[in-house]
Amino acid sequence: MEQFLKLINQAGLSSQVVTDLSLVVDDKHITHGCIFNVKVDRKNFKLFVPSPLHEPLLADGKKPLLKEIIQIKEVMLLK
Image 1: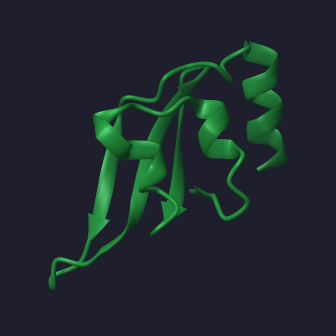
Image 2 (image 1 turned 90 degrees about the horizontal axis):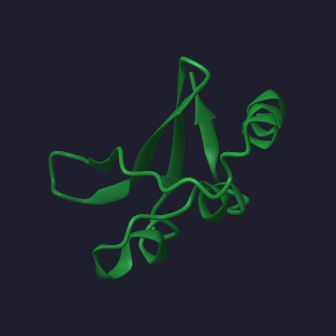
């Protein structure tokens, strides 16, 4: 996660709008969170924000900024 944050700061992408996202929904239609796909220097990173913390990021159909996502303490970087 530290390397990811370093890449974001070096590239100056913290104010980038994240448009590529997927909700994580199980077979009982329960939403468990959201995966945000972020591309930095030809690499793709996936950030998982658990439920219910993802809901304010997506409220009213808005797209979150990368800095809003990484400020959440519970965010996880997936491999």
